[in-house]
Image (cartoon, rainbow, N blue to C red; front, side, top):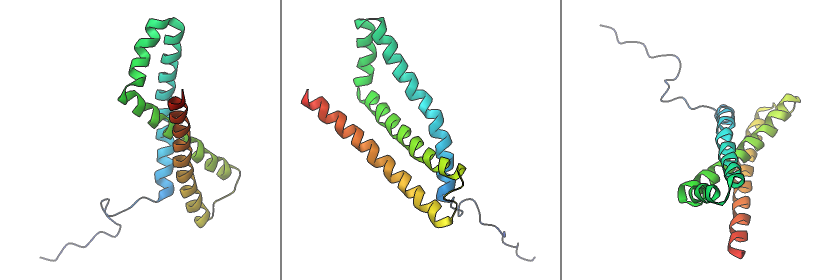
Length: 131
């Protein structure tokens, strides 16, 4: 019996998606997660309008560790979607299609996301400690 021929294309476990594909998929996913962050903000605003008891109940969840984690992730998602959206706007205008530029802007968008998220949280934490 002859050995079976090997496949011509890489197997899914070996194939690695390019960074641009991962960021493109992540851009769409973060757009969906932004809705959840907005719903949290709306719930907080509605509770504030409803009165002190309702606000205290919602604020208790927002101030808990899981609420803070959701807020941190919402901030990260917002800045990632923003920074990657700027890349998409440049592409829509016809700029940045060269392969080195595509990879460079991908890393710049990721770095800017991390820096902006950390800056917002550092400012928020220092303002909270100062009050």
